[in-house]
Length: 371
Image 1 (tube, rainbow, N blue to C red):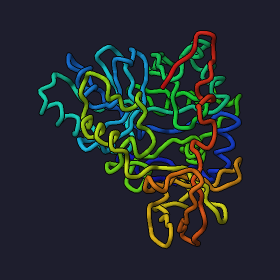
Image 2 (cartoon, one colour):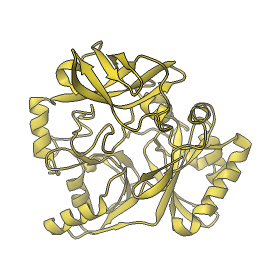
Image 3 (cartoon, rainbow, N blue to C red):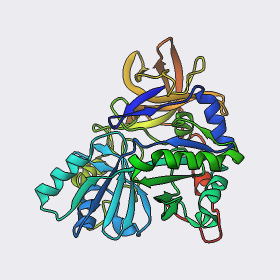
Image 4 (cartoon, rainbow, N blue to C red):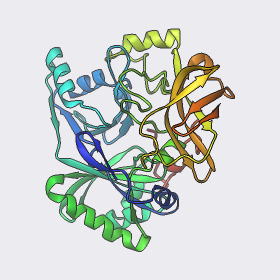
């Protein structure tokens, strides 16, 4: 099954999303995530301009470090939530979620008179994820791969191909991403190399595992998803001081609006919910093609934006955007599923491994990092 992401066909799954989920949890998996387009910002003003785009303080981002960041609109809405890679002192990559950023960034740079070069690269990433991912990566790149801390990157060469490898992923599991230069030329060559290295480890090719994403509190960007242009970091529970750094000296787009939202408090919040009724699907199997309306006292008050059945928790879980006054833990709601209206209750999220101990685990004595 395929979907369209960043104007590109994207494999959603390869037959059985639940089987793919268990393979991710217990083994090692390979994902085609070439749809994560890479926008490079370089030039004399690259640092100042990239800082203008993102809400985090980039003075706290070292060369060869990665950061999960928000790009916000002037009203504080989220335009994209990429992983930022600081490849060099004045060279940044934005590994994009599903929205157009290049032309928007070019417009901001032109309007502000910044001396930067902004372009989409011929770089295509793949993800190697799961507890045995380290074994496949060692076979590909050697033991030095274990020295990459969580949310850091390192350049490598593999069979004549230039790549960057980062300790990142979309799973909340141990994992890596391989960013391939000249991807339109070498994509099949890299894919075959990873498949071959994975054979002794029973590597499986899968699509994005949305069950594990939802368990782990990872959000999806897009219209009708967990966040979009009309949502802000405080509404989705990501208004941490380190994600939206209002105390930094530098300005960034949306800073004034976000300061006001923090002072007044958000009017709605994205919360975790356990949902009653029969077992839901895996989200990416076509079982949730639209939001589920949320009701309280006979009135619609919000919507479930992501939901699935968690095989290991043996319950339906998801996220719901509701008014702040109805976001307290234990609040009972009604969810209008396509086939039935069922009860739901607000619970803590993430549902599994809230401190992200699994993906952050140290692989060598020198490792250690923070996203």
